[in-house]
Length: 173
Image 1: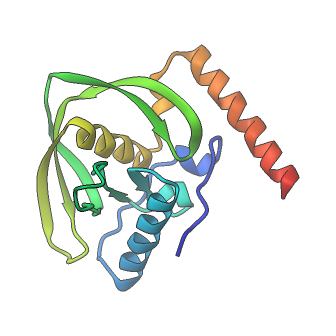
Image 2 (image 1 turned 135 degrees about the vertical axis):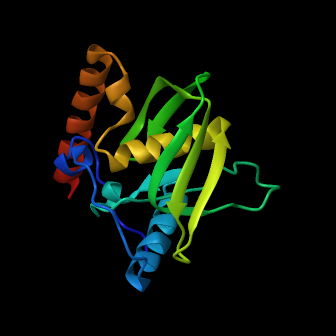
């Protein structure tokens, strides 16, 4: 089931999320809803707080080539265990900050550990777009947005645009 995505500024997007702990059928259903919401948006990643659930859970799929099969991933209680010193710059966007982009520098390669929906711990090294995406989504779990990496003027400009968008959406009801 598709869920509504919170739009910045929303206080829930600035809060640190609680660990999930045990993987239950409800968490499995939440992950399924998040993947449906992400693909529909369309996006390549979505964190639980973006749909108002304050749990450390994210989904992502950075396969953009239509010739390749999708690779939906669900990461429960993810943590970065290692990051390269080399940085990559990407023009990032966010489903909670629609149609706004900014260049963010992040480690080019990261190793991430998480629990899968099967309840087992997993670990993988991500690079390129996957590394950027997983770091962006883990930031969400820590109450941080990509605009927090931008200069204050650009951040204020984007925030004002989002406030106006929210007013316009509320008016349309």
